[in-house]
Image 1 (cartoon, rainbow, N blue to C red):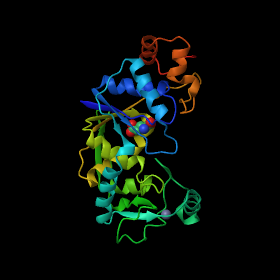
Image 2 (tube, rainbow, N blue to C red):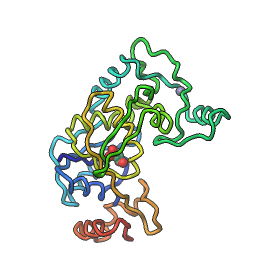
Image 3 (tube, helix red, strand yellow):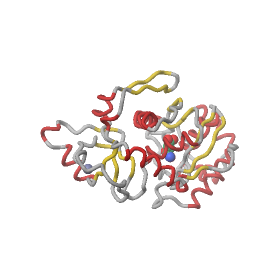
Length: 274
Ligand code: GLU
Ligand code: ZN
């Protein structure tokens, strides 16, 4: 099995990342992907720190590492394909527009999907002809989504097209500022890296139907999925990206050995005091 660990270089790796990397390495040959499409927040020094922390944990991975900031052409090709088939439309709504439209009385209570409030479809009628617009967000018309099924943790999961449209809606596949979205990039890259088993935190499980839908539409294989539990603090709260006190670097500075930290994580997903 080929698995992957796919951190974003936007801050120090914390215990949650370490657990994700260990799960990936436990389940197959782990490859590494640097998810740096957010160029505002990504920093080369955080990428270097990722390599240092993973080496300290005793993990290895093949070269070259795939870096999403090098992959604009691959994401553009996938978007061109979907655009040419009339499956995308430009959306110019901001967050406030979406909230206001979703809160309109005829819509009922706004539904929350994997990306926040389910988009009420305001821009669905926008023109889909001509060259692909690249300065606005592009949404997938979920009308094109068929019945989906996939395997998560060995169990068959399914969602039909109607449920997708209701609970997820039309996901953003190209963000105005980034040229892609997480959903499109992760699907294109899991295929390019030949990933057989996607291991990742259970917080990402709700996004999986979007990824499976994109695999179908782009004729890419659907890998197996395994969503794992998250590392939490003593109060049961999941570690936040900015919880620097739980960074691997701070445990290291406090004298923890990698072996002790790994043994702790295998036993309990509660972060010890560093
Ligand atoms: N880059 C994501 C993160 O840091 C992981 C995405 C994935 O595993 O699909 O949480
Ligand atoms: Zn819109």
